[in-house]
Length: 127
Image 1 (cartoon, helix red, strand yellow):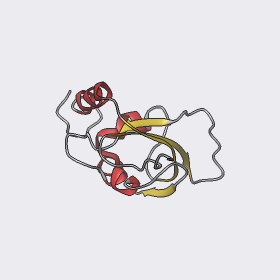
Image 2 (cartoon, rainbow, N blue to C red; image 1 turned 120 degrees about the vertical axis):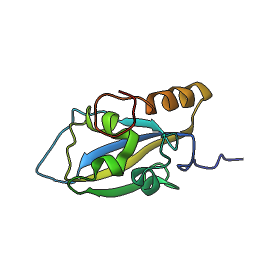
Image 3 (cartoon, rainbow, N blue to C red; image 1 turned 135 degrees about the vertical axis):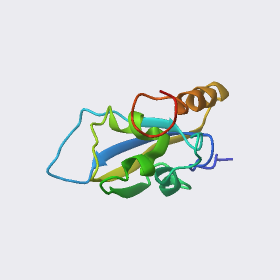
Image 4 (cartoon, rainbow, N blue to C red; image 1 turned 180 degrees about the horizontal axis):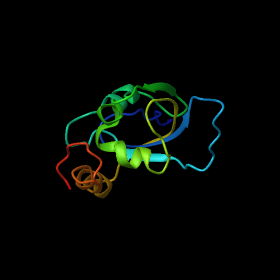
């Protein structure tokens, strides 16, 4: 009996490959972006909503307009932007690389980290 492929839903550990859609910019320095889906302190972000139900190999294009990055990615802003050097406005090509059920300890870590971040201006109150 073959196992059903996993799709993105609550409490899944998601691994993404993220590239800017601007083909004139080539940046192979960023690694995969890994996060636990659905553990943000303010609920599911528009970025997460766009990923819901997607599986390995699925792609989405995300257009981020000026002033909406924090609203779009919410609690994921700092881990999303800092290692990738992403600044709004930008169009992103996002590919789902892996989806697995998150271990309990990873969920707890993600929930704790979501409530506090650096001084990013997201309003999380964790400063």
